[in-house]
Length: 588
Image 1 (tube, rainbow, N blue to C red):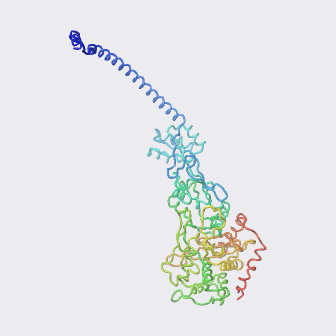
Image 2: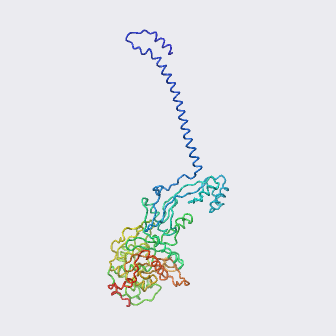
Image 3: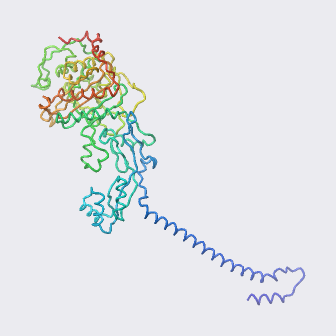
């Protein structure tokens, strides 16, 4: 049709003024079509070449990656959960003691696993040869039942190469992060432990996770060397006295820093997941010092005496009849500990030295229930307390604060207190009378005493009375020459089945050193200690166990804490305190 159309156009009549361009249009159209056809073929060829290039490039990448993985396995990185993953270089902060000794760190290690082995029996035999901890029969069952089996966590370089050369092709290696606790069981209840995903499950480790403390390393208040001696001596005591458990704590009396805290039995956070069942983990990680709540016995008499002196209800030259009958039930009078013989008239200082229940009950009656409750609240024994870890205990109060409750609380029964709260409460009384806030973090300031709890005069009188307990009372085995140790013992029956007796006892010693200006508070306690005649332990009261253990701890730790040894000053104290001496009537 195009050629016929062209011939007709050529025979058409041309008139002057007409546009002649249309006469050449058909030839131009044919020329454009030829060029277009040529360009389409060329573009198609170029596209094919480009596709071949991309295919070859992608295939080369695939071959290179496959070859790399075959030669160098284990390049897949297993990272911690984002909640604790600050950077790949340092997913968790390191933990140090107050003297910059490393307590916990994070290292990169390898984990070996296997997927769908072709021959489980042969694979188990080869793996057993390089990882002897595996039971071959158990490993065979796992390989047969599961598509994925973890062979080893935290393998050494030697184990890594041994497994590579074992002939088992299906083994996979994954770089993983692992938390390392450099001192194993030491201070484990404070530091705590983390799971395999680096999420803290107890202690400071749990605080790191929950509070996301990831920006800076952590410096604790504890001294790991002092911690060692505290744990060591309590462990010796548990063995010597055949006790069920024991705990202890040392607190700076002015800054509130926890220098050491021990709760035994303890655990190794490096191996807890492998070596402990779930129930055993819960039992082993329980922190008696910070989570427990106990009746500590006659150490509570410090509070009763301080309360009465602060309220100005008694004076040190007052006297009390220690033979009077104080009714605690219709047909029962209150007895002293194990029915110890009583003197007719004794002073408040002798009430503490002789640990008289009757005397303390009379003092409590003079002060009254309301003031007793208010004072113990002010000291911090009746409330939950704040600390940098999440596992904290609460006191167990009487259901009704009755007159009988007032009497029994005055000498250490009927009120269960958290040991840490009690130790910090004693510190607040003997450090000049100022409240302290216990802390697990290293403090810049050495003196962080807060508001006044008792006057400095009352604090001085309590220190004097506590010194007499150590000089000539039940705390004599805690005395360490050169430090003028002050303290008080306590022996409490453990309540069970709604009554006391038949379930053993808990012993305690709370004290401070040096006596002339207390810098450190020490609390030591044993649960159900027993006599040990062969070793010269002739009883199970605190005189025979908690007191001697406290003395041994002070002797070892006072020099480490740079406490001034001053024999001359010890002799002068408290005789230089003439104001107290004149009120003391020791020979009454």
